Every structure is written in structure tokens, then in C-alpha cells.
Image 1: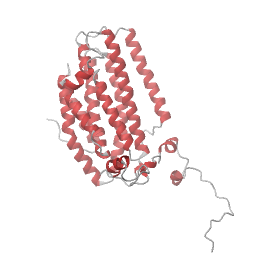
Image 2: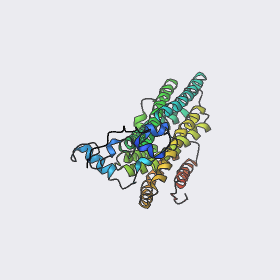
Image 3: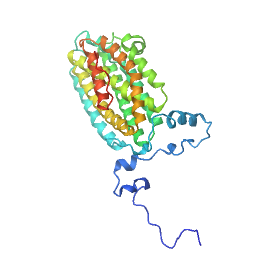
Image 4: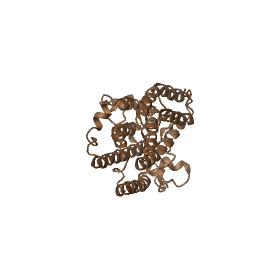
Length: 338
């Protein structure tokens, strides 16, 4: 008996990639360019084809492969928006054009020179230092990119990191504009000092710094996506935008609304991933445990920032209630605010 392959008949080529062949249909662009791309997940003991004692190998094994948040097939996750690089850049190009239009129109109307007298000082305290906060969210998102359990998860985290980078750039641009209109208020000079020393920022600084040194992939996801980022979105973006509108600062109000569009997309993939891992009862309990651990930090951050925010006394309650509604939508009920 011969054990050699029969070469008398030519092999028929696959009509699609082997991991997509089971669906018996033509794969979508999203499936072709997004799925099963991480070769570092093939061998759980040697994620980068290096020796077991290599620092990079030990890091990925400990903080990604051995994370208590588990799933039998991480590659089965799908982004609900099915974004790829091409569609993301097309979409955000339109958003960037919209933002450019807002900035140009308000600049032509001397917006910064005609704001209420006290408001620019509040912007110097509550808005322009926020580039440090948003950059921290960007770095935390980038850590999720590095340790993502699949390429489809990695893409969601990567687009989120790109969103944060875009807004860091926009805040820096506005800082320069405000410095020209109000050269005596320290725009472009005092933001780091305010970020590090102003009590209004203490809670957020602690929250994001602790998130950045939470290395386990699962807990980092929970800390960032279920606590830190929603708190940032609801307080330092939505409530700041609300305060700006009350002060007649239509530009910041509209910029905040545009920024929250990115936040809504972030919440969609976060919800999809929570539902994806929720098939395992242990994961549900684990996520609840992490939320309970991190929520006090998030609440303190909102309280410190919103208590100092001028003109809206219910800002902290509104922000915390919105964060709780987001988590309730994921099935995590928490005590009502008193």
C-alpha cells in the first residue's frame, strides 16, 4: 500500500481563505481583512516564537494568555460596525471636514474674542488640560491593541486609539487659538501644572494612571471600557460641553457633541465584546467584580471634576447616572445614586 498522496488528479484550489470556507458564501471585505490575523496567538506558550524566558514572551503569557477573562474562540468576535481601515478613514475624513468647518467659521466670527469675560479662564482650567486625560485614554487603548486576543478585537481598540489621538490634536489646536486670543491666561503654558496640581483633575489623574498600570488584559479592558472611558466621556466631554453651551461657547459645545459620536461607537463594540464573553458564567462574575472595584475611583473622578465645573450644579449626578445606564444596558445593575 502506498502512503504517498495521489497526484494523478490536480488539487482543486480553495475558493476563499480556509478559515472562512465553512460559511459557504463569499466573504465580506471586513472578514477578509480583519479575521484570524494574529499569529502571536497560535502557540499559547510561545506567543512570539521566542524562548519561554524571553521578557516579551513572559509578559504576553502572563497578562494575555493567562488572563482570567476567557473564551474558547476569540477569533469569532465581530465588530458590530464592521469597520476596516478603508471605511474608518473615509468616515473620519468626513468628520474631520466637519470639525474644520466649525473651527473656520467660528474663527471668522472672532468667537474666542467675544466669549463671556470669565469663560476663557474656565477653559484654561477644564478644557485645554484635558489633552493629558485624552492622551492617557489613547495610551490605555493602545495597550489593549498590543494584548488583544484576536485581530477583530485589536481593530476596535486601534480605531479607538486613533479617535483619541485625533481629539488630542484638536484640543492642542484650540489651545493655540485660545493663546492668541487671550495671551495673558497661560494657554499652552500651564496645562501640565493644572493637570498635576488642580484638585478638579485629581480623580481623573488617579483613575487613568491606575488603569495604565493594570496589565492583565481582561481587567484593563474592564477598567478602561466599563469605568474610566465612560466617566471621561460623561464628565469631561458631555458635561463640559453642556457648561460651554450655557456660557454661549457654541464651538466647544459642538466639538463635544462631535467627540461623543466616537464614544458611541466605542460603546457599541464594548457592548458586543461583553456579550461575546458573557457566554461563560465566570466571565460575568469577573467583570462585575472588576466594575465594583473600579467604580469608586470613577465616581470620585466625576465628583471632583464636576463639583468645580461652573454653572451646572447637577453635573456630577447627570454624569454618574449616564455611566450607570451604560453599564445597566450591559446587564450590570448598580445601586441607584442617592
